[in-house]
Image 1 (cartoon, one colour):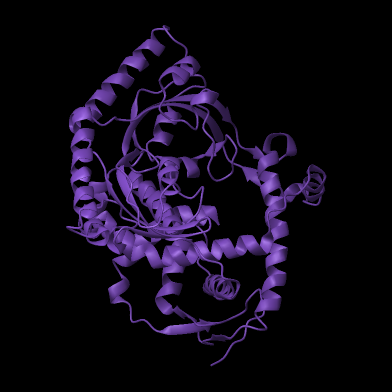
Image 2 (tube, helix red, strand yellow):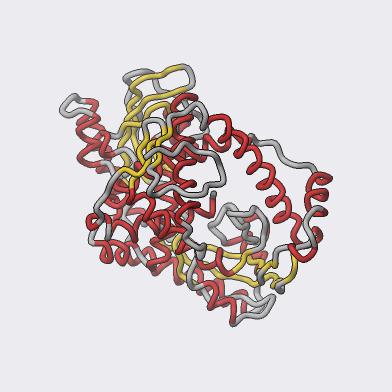
Length: 445
């Protein structure tokens, strides 16, 4: 399901250019949730872009299943917060900004600002996150033991073992542009003036946040976030928020996103309702150029043998996730250190071309890329290892086989859940679009 999420926003971006041309109609209802013809068409387009045969029956059934999950989530009070939705939207937008090359190119192509696109996609993403959370509740978090994984592997006929494509292991040294002191001071002073208007009663927090906050996840709601729990927001943000009393306005403080101040609306045990305003310092071309100059200098040090790559990572890298392990990158989809071309192209379209020209142990010249928050950065890549194509085996592919075994187990759990819940949930499907399904659904003309 995670792989699906990585490309889903791209499908939304494609389909939005055609959505007004569709003559839409309801082709199914699950609980209180309709399935539209446009939903089916866009889902089939998604599968085609995944290089999966766009089978109408299977695609339609997946939509029915997702609506059943959301309907059950209503009964079980399974929800996602605005912050979770915003985080997922930001992650996906950062990925596709990287695919287009820049935020400006993305906006130019669709003729809309990034925040407008995000607002249009928000309901769909919210529903998908709820469905994911509900799926997790069904399958549980129990992991198979090594013995169970070996048993599963031994049940696969040798001629049915999957072929593992060529993979690489990579290390990286990352430098991120830093805001100038002048830009930080300007942002802080501006936010101090907004805070003064709030605490003096000249304006309300809601109004100021709506007009001036640069947090796309809350500005349109007057800076409001509901039911914030510990571990959900940035640590510095939480440290300030959980010290406030009801009605209190914090001082201006800094996080990795910029400068904030918070007004605590309500405290319900360990749940907070609050409003906040964010102002981010503005990155200048000089800041980006200074970052490029720094990484060019580091590259020369490494090439001239003045410092080893791993030592340089520990000394200079700005990426906290890889800084302490020699820059070794972890595949976000598999939690392993191996990447195939498909995943590499999703991370950075320039990586494959660069790596094809490299030998194991070599480093790349500094490359510009989009960081996880969509901002520009530079990195040097080292090709640590290259693995040739081969049939899956426990020695080299234990992690993948473990995922296959867990997937098989979870699929069986889901089938049993569908069998039970579909019998007690209102389901009406248009027979014109229904056909031979894997599960037993109610079909009504």
